[in-house]
Length: 409
Image 1 (cartoon, rainbow, N blue to C red):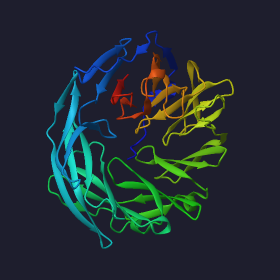
Image 2 (cartoon, helix red, strand yellow):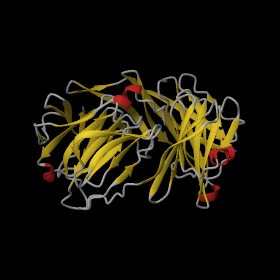
Image 3 (cartoon, rainbow, N blue to C red):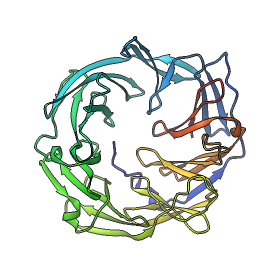
């Protein structure tokens, strides 16, 4: 779910600095007598190594541990969320919500497990009709613990449709808050973005190689094709604040950016056909150009591998002092586009990542911290991602064990 992308007005005045930490991380061997090993890297990074060997712990995409006991037919008999606190795993109060909803004569049903931890809602979906073309999943709403979005879909290709209902966890009621907006009639929607208050939405659709971007004012029951409104063949749009949209026009090679004032109708171009970064993966090839992350901020790598942060709403570039992009270096944004995960991989095989450097560029503070890792060529690390807006998760399938490594900068 997209959120409003305002980091801070101070960002435009920041000097971004890069600090390469002296301490090198040495990932410990799994401790058979302990489920969690903690480490402090340079006094700036908290690391936790979670040993999953001989346990039935699993982890959600949002970084929450859970245990699920299945019956013979695959149904969940018992389920519990667990949190990691001070080197311990604690069972959390977990609720089960069984629902049944109907949309366009299609029935959707299943169980949603939820818990509230540190004021945030965590979810796990247990679908009872996995083989059906009628798919669903739940989406947490930022800042709310009383309700979730239910994403419903059916059909394939040109016949694909998707819709959203509001599901109230306490009562089990579903609310058709999009009725009359026109969203239900959209053909081949790729994804939706929502304002924080759910009063507005952006829908991106792809049909017959034609990409359409729609803006929906839910309270007013209006749906607007932004390309027809602006006269620009747009490929994406995002919420900046309550009155401003950021809109992108991308080709295979270039990107242009515009802001649109929803109150006055003023359209302003901020970037004009900037060369896009060509991602060669982990090959020993250096390139240059603009990196996109699905939000207000991007990165520009020049032909000497120097880095700048680009604010698409103004077009301003802010250099990152002291940083040069390494071959094999890659960035990944968190969901709110406020922090960028940096990793350098030089895999010994196509199967594992071999991450030799890890860092975070924090757009809210202007700080970029990174550290080197040793012994990573002996690890079978196959996945790296954000597990929430503040923590990085590495999945490790080392021989004879399975583990998760969590980092908080």
